[in-house]
Amino acid sequence: MRIARHAALAAALLIQGLIAAPAQAGLAIVLNSGEDTYSLIDTDTYKEIGKKPVGREPHHLMLTPDKRDLLIGNAVGNDLVFVNPATGDVIKRLDQIADPYQLGFTPDRKWFVTAALRLDRVDVYDAKAIGERKLTLVHRIPIKTMPSHLAFAADSRRVFVTLQDAGSAAAIDIVDGKILWQAKVGPDVAGLWLAPKGDKLLIAVMGSDHLAVVDTKDGKVLDKIVTGKGTHQLYEDKGRGLLYVTARVDNTIAAVDTTTFKVTRVYKVGPGPDCMEIFRGGKELWYTARWAKRVEVLDLESGKVIKKIPVGRSPHGIHLHPDAKTASR
Image (tube, rainbow, N blue to C red; front, side, top):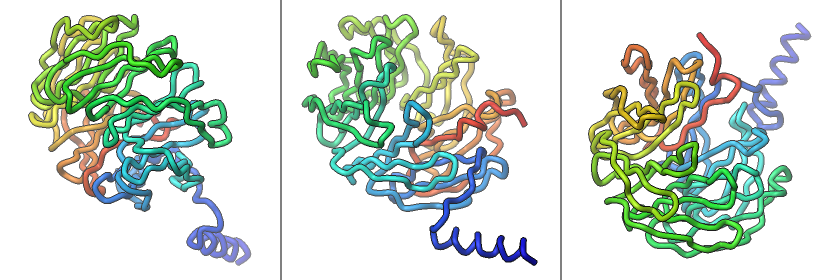
């Protein structure tokens, strides 16, 4: 009877929000940018187990360098939300973080950078107090138009950014807050990936069907890799030496060898594939299907979509709890 009473009390406190939900290593968090919420998914049952309001137009999310907090950027809400990645509970909200559409830390963890797509600028913050959940604005760099995605050089000095509406890419000196170069790449550019040697960028050309291979010295386009119409986002599987690339018109995901830059396989998937995460020791690829209001799970060996998980409107960023990413099933 005593155990039952304790369980009932705990349940009541949980409902009232007076205690935190228990940690769930098998938790996925998905941003529903079209309805200002995020969904919580149980990765064991492949089912949505909750949904929470977060702020206006959440698009991208990432772990802090110490992996303690999950950061969610509300692009129109102009704030940054700190969330417990194991429970999905909101911890803190930082106001006056203007239009954090895309976000990232430099490899040395000293700088936090946001691409303000709506406001046509890149903002650089001093991140030394991120453990205290604080940021200090250092540079506000105007750049047109629609800065979209980011990639950081290994020296933490440069950030590369795609300018979606301009069809261009740019390199920015983070420390000095200056634009080093800006160059045309192709129509409607989006995601990008920096090769390990630091000499080339692969940039998704969403208004066409390919990745542009770009020289990091000056932005010159060296080659292209055809991946599918509406090429949009990139995700690296370092363990297999592959880059997964979504195509939101063809509704495909291409696997590109990161050494040869050759397409090794193309998977047919659901409508509007966008952000991705590898799961279950590399057996599954989870991705948001933005046009279908769901998350889909791709079995990479068979090439089949094995699960379709309904979530909110226009799902965008996705995060899988790191304790479960490498687990087998």
